[in-house]
Length: 174
Image (cartoon, rainbow, N blue to C red):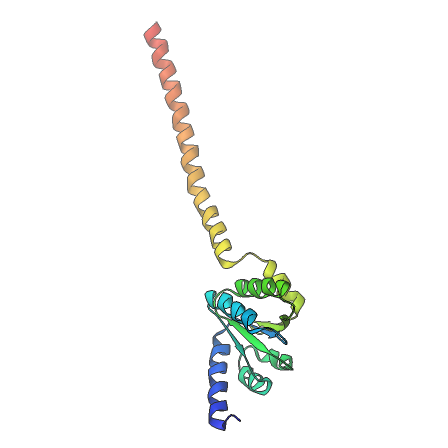
C-alpha cells in the first residue's frame, strides 16, 4: 500500500508535468507485453514525451487545476498518459502509428491545450504535417522570394548585356 506522502508526491509530480504539457493523450494498454511497452516508451522518449501509467484516482486529481482537467472522465480501467511539451502533432503521429501495429494500445481521449479530443480527432491531428516539416516549408517559401528576385535581376542584366554586345558587333562590322 502506498503512503499518503508518496501519493501526494506522485500527484504533485504528475500535476507539474501536466501543467507544462501542451497535449495529453490518455491510452488504454490492457494486456500489452512489457517488450511492447518498452518500445513505445523509447519511441516517445525520443520525442521528449513523458509516458507513464497512472492510477485512475491519482490521474484525476493530477489533472485537476491544469488545462487538461477535461480528461478527468477518461481515467477508468488501465490508463497511461502521454504528455507532450513541444510538438503535439509529433506525439499524435507516434501514438497513432504505434496503435496501428499494436493489438493492445488504444487511445481513449486527449486534451490539446485544454480542448477535449476524441480518438478520431487525435487521428486527424496525426495526419497534419509536423513542426519540422512546417518550418522547412516556411523556410523554403522565404528563401524562394530572394532567389527569384536575384534570377529575375540577372536575366534583366543578361538581356542588357546581349543588347550591348549586339550593338558592339554591329558597330565593329560597319
